[in-house]
Length: 316
Image 1 (cartoon, rainbow, N blue to C red):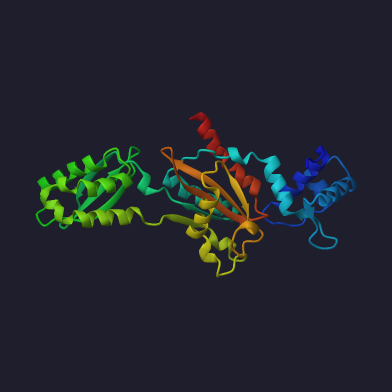
Image 2 (tube, rainbow, N blue to C red):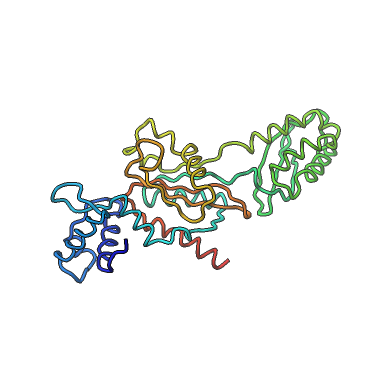
């Protein structure tokens, strides 16, 4: 239902005042005073009565002010934000992702969790095998941006500079211009072409590299802000379990998606919202950046934090 311009004005005032990080019920007098409305309290009260009749706000207690309903939040998100256009093709590197997670969590006192870039989908530009110490080589799998995945492996007994250089050349043939996932497959398929003194250790190295690249990578920041809302039994869900659910539910949906805590298949998330944005690397989907916050958090300001990424995309 479309609201009149006056009712929309009152409605947005209620939403901005309630979602200020404190969550106090909003009285008509507060709207007039703090929002500089060119109308009297009686006019505001009448508009609030209409909004309550439509199901957008309600009074939690007798003689209390009004707070938004689930329907009111949904109307707010649908009518006042272009969520599908928010950071629609965000491509942060890992350092940016981690720094932004801490920034958002600390600034708004919310929980942030995100899957770190998937190592396995990165494309290798070149490989370097370095002499690490007496018993180990260090393998650097380097992409075009200069970021590398490193793994320390045990040298073959016959190791010398010539064998190391031969192995270096062979790994570049195997991994060059391939994703890490494809490179691992090629290591197994091309094992018979590896330098002779490396054959005995090749299976062990392949398993070690696959294990390292397959390690779970999920950052969780600020979960302590939710401890007063979420029962101890539900707290382990924050992170990979919840991220896996969100990724499955939203798939590759672009822009920002918002899920009401009531709609999550877990208990204890009532009164919370989950804001989630997919991110990419080298045109490939990586994971999701997800914020879990109280429904009275500064949601509008949080959404606007992503505008900088839209500006970067437009100017790129």
